[in-house]
Image 1 (spheres, one colour):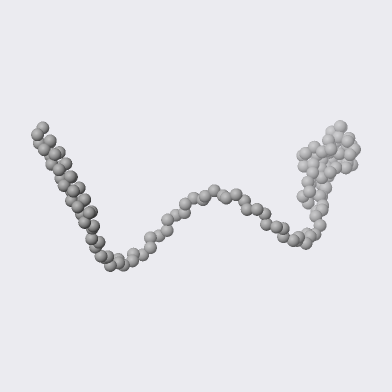
Image 2: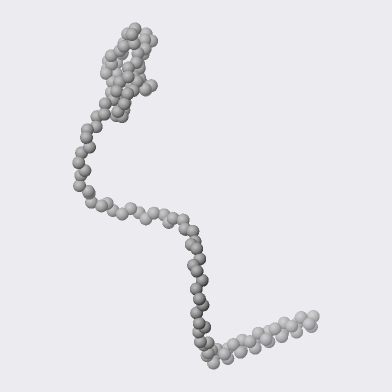
Length: 134
């Protein structure tokens, strides 16, 4: 069995022999593309154990030139409405303006108010009379 950082791997040859010095030969495919040193361990059918610290090389080349900017994509959907913000400070008090002219009430309205006041007075009188009779 051959393991890469503890993960069992497929190897060539399928059965790996480990000698008494802990050396073995096997072809493996790195389980990562991240540059760095790792540990491969092997245990054969006789429980002989060996390990090797292979280094995964950095296979990236130099960064290429930046390509032309593509067309702008469509607008996305409208997002959710955010929370209401805090209320701002009250502004400074300003001077009060001049009083405007008093508007005259139309004659029809004055007559209507007089009628309304008379009706309310009559209702109050009726209620008062009923209370004192009982």
